[in-house]
Length: 270
Image (cartoon, rainbow, N blue to C red; front, side, top):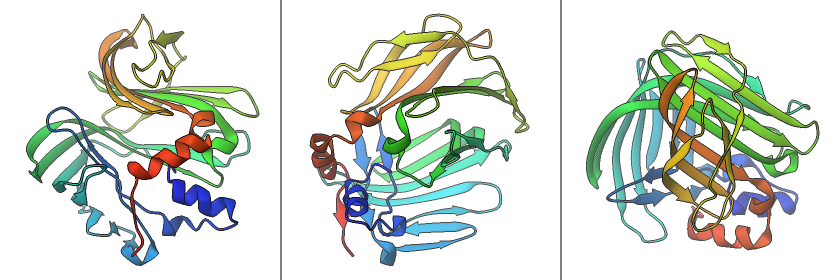
């Protein structure tokens, strides 16, 4: 959805999504790596239980989602190779409409999961709590939304998710969900709004909701239109360490931002 090539194609009257596919892999800490090479339909193979994009693939083996990674990083090229396994404790089966016209949907497939990472390039192993969701839509995000923020926190018995969107038409939407280890989803009253400091480089505004004032532990992504952060917060009466995202779509659609994106999202035309 952040592909500049897809945006340019749509403006010319085209825009077949299958021609603009990528597997995005981001490693934070040491070493820090990023890969998101876009490929066309000839490099894509898909079925009910698998999706291959170039040399990388995602498949369901019956108990886990297996992600086989074979990518080259950008902007500085290096090999990124290995396997990630996502083991859901349960699948929710829930789907939420994010806009008044029903053009954008979100499903928290497995908010309480266990993830195992085994990379060979670079040599890295990790396991811990994880998350799996999906977004899909019939229109460009920037056409229907001004901004949104999202937050997911592992809890003692499952996870809590906050999803706040500012629509271009129809006002704001705020979802607050408690997800159990059995996949059950229960809405709870959204906590009060809370402001986080803007990102240090691009000054992206960050906001969330919380029972008490949250704080930023680490900024993982600081781009002109998007941030990903680790925050300390309090939800449902529990202290939690959460992953937080902010997206500013007016900035994303700006021509100067679109011109910068190919440095992080290179394209292989075959």
